[in-house]
Length: 287
Image (cartoon, rainbow, N blue to C red):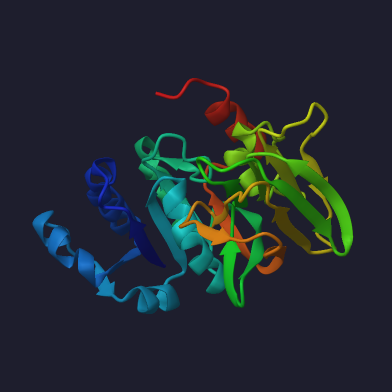
């Protein structure tokens, strides 16, 4: 079995565990693949038996993506794993690592990869089209799409449509439109509900709405969503997809969101339920 190691070696915790992951994979008869840019550091760590190639070569040849880092590393590589229809396992070296199902002290469980003793959790993704002025930009999201006002901006009014039907309009600091996977990320911090990833829906959560009655909503994926805003005294609004670089948009520019045909298969190597992860990772203090 070929395992493509996708590691964030800029982080000290990842660099520390990286050799142990490589050696454990080899111990259980798996072949580690890594990008050529890691060849020098692997030589410094006295690691052998790794096949180096470009990211594209490794994505084509691998059976599994294995990320070492936090949820940000999974977001970065998960979209590529979805395109190549390869499952992904995350080894957590971040603070929370909600999508990473294997903790660094349990690397011996990697043995389950070699004989398929694991479950897959299929995660819905979003296709996002941002139309700003005369140009369009397209993205794929695993977690969420966030519209938010500039730091010193007056409060804009956001409008959300499902198909051609207006769902809501609200004055707020911003809007979060998330997948069930993203329900445990920014949306949760903004008061949104936790959604079982087996459920297929959009979650709409307003950021600091200027009303007593606005509540998070779950919307059908049968119709695409469209979000836009009305300015108040030259309000400025930006869009960010999965926490990436913000894009400025003007009043009535549109952000269109639909359920993607792509999906990501996350490997659950422990066989724990989604609710076990909620309990163990979200219901205890962070270290």
